[in-house]
Amino acid sequence: MAAIALLRMHAYTNDESYRDKAEQTMDVFAGMAEQYGIFGATYGIASVHFSQPHTQVVIIGSGKEAERMLAAAAAGFAFNKAMIKLTPNEAVAQNLPLALAATIPSLPGIQGKTATAVVCSGFHCQPPVSEPEQLTRTLRDALTRPAA
Image (tube, rainbow, N blue to C red; front, top):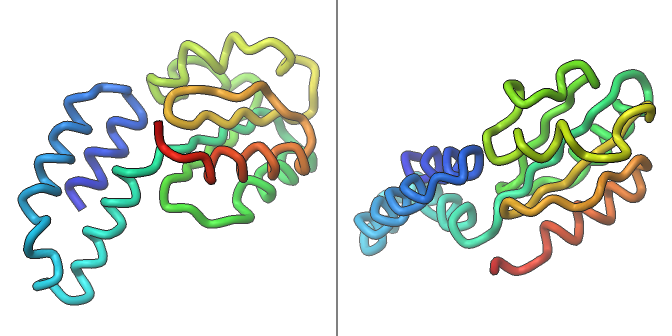
């Protein structure tokens, strides 16, 4: 669990020291995870977080369109996916993870739309999308892309 928490901190801050500490933690348990039975599965989950880029979906908007975008983002399960839905007034730097705070508030094309979603994977964001079908495709591509 500590490795998972450290990897999530890395995903939200882009601070490499969190990833390094997670790797060190996983190294300690690498040879003995199977001794913990079902609880050893947590090691497997940490391995997924470590080996696949984190993917964050930021939905900006309100009303039915924003709810449709949120449903599209939540449709498929992935250990390495996190979602946040904000109203346009909430899409400001202090409400976003540090890795996204410089990007999301200044994206062109999010103003004046009822709902917009941005998919960021491994600290790289895709262009904003405004249709649930586009979001589904963008998210599927981000989640199946191999780690760099």
